[in-house]
Image (cartoon, rainbow, N blue to C red; front, side, top):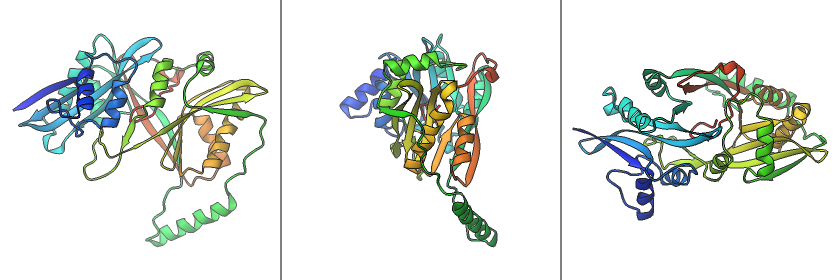
Length: 339
């Protein structure tokens, strides 16, 4: 017989502090590193329902989790993961666990960012609308040289490396300071230059993301969305000054040979210098992959640096009331995605 169980922040904390399972809660459901991050979210309460799971004859069948956020002073929830083990698919378990948490969080809204197809379908079922935004990837791109066509492609790629080597760092007239958190100056700048952002996160939330970075599941035979086989990202806040005045702020997220710009604010008059500082950082770091959701930054990087592989990724966003997304931009940088 299937059995539904719901775990609160208090359950997570007791599980972590006492180092023993709490009525089925285990690393199979959520990695301790991620659990520690969630219990330190600045907007959680002990009584908040955070994880929902279904067990069938004592075996974990499906689970989901979420975490609160503060957007323009309003507490909302993000659907953080949804997983159903293959042998239990087709029974509606995903719909049940997701629906239970959404009901628990009323009247606060639940949103979904970068959801899998199944998650998008569930949100549609509950009356949510889905829109898609672009994420841009530049990477080294491995070429399979097993075939004649592959060998030709490899030769073409090596030729391009000679014709278009890494640029030299420019001597642009700016200074840059790095920090490990969002300070008063940075947050005031973000507020002043949010332009057409759909939301602006609270400062405490931004610093929580930077201090307790979410983990991304690795790929292995037993990998699961909240798995303990994970890599952790490092965040860095960059402040760009021109003639001693702050003109740009962005947050860099570094992983294994990857670099992402997850928040980006700037004055239009000095935009080129702010973007130049990012390009110079890429040149110094030499990552194999660069990711951004800012189309103009993507184009500037592609013009200046040699990345043989280019990809555009559609990122879903599920909202109960859909604004005219063409009039807004999104700056979200957490979870298994990074927005």
